[in-house]
Image (cartoon, rainbow, N blue to C red):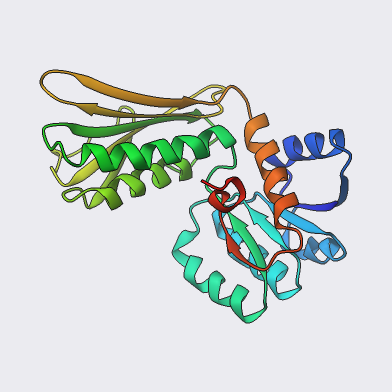
Amino acid sequence: MKIALIGYGKMGKAIEQIALDQGYQIHAIINDAEELPKAMGADVCIEFTQPSSAFDNLKFCIENHLPVVCGTTAWYDRFEEIKEISSQNDGALLTATNFSIGVNVFFKINRELAKIMNKFPEYKVSMEEVHHLQKLDHPSGTATTLANDIINASGEIDSIRAYLEGETISAENENELSILCKREPEVPGTHSIKYESKIDTLFIEHKAKNRTGFASGAIIAAKWLVGKKGVFTMNDVLGI
């Protein structure tokens, strides 16, 4: 499998190392839009860049019939547009806010737990996410996915309120799901969800030890996507 890496930051480098260790070929390394034509001839592209460039990168890949796996987050306001482009071009696109197998199992647990807890309004749900200092956006894409799944299961919560640790915030709205976002040195990613009542607390958490899970999951997704057409997620890859 020949892989074109679009984006060569920490994730790109981690994916490169694991891909080479598994015997795959790095067909091209692309750092900006002008270099996108270097991806031509690849079996699959893996895109980890910035929200401002993700849409155009995906559009290029789809219009040039390059299967593409995207791990960039915070661009999903244009997701329906990219789905339409993929449909028009018979494209192959797989997106995920997190490629870690453990996190995707955590997503599943969160969805099921949210359905159960919606029956018990005496429990107040809240979230916390912790990432490295270089992560500029908040909440994380993973936290947003978790929060949206909770909202979809809830009859009361209809919005997200994310705030950085130490930030002054207004009084809490009962219809909001609060997400405390912390930025600390060398933290790959921790996400926790808490349901609290006057009598007890229920708590689930996923803590990444390094970036290996994210990178290896992206390669699993890329291998799965080759030869397929359509728009997919990690749920399709893992069958959950």
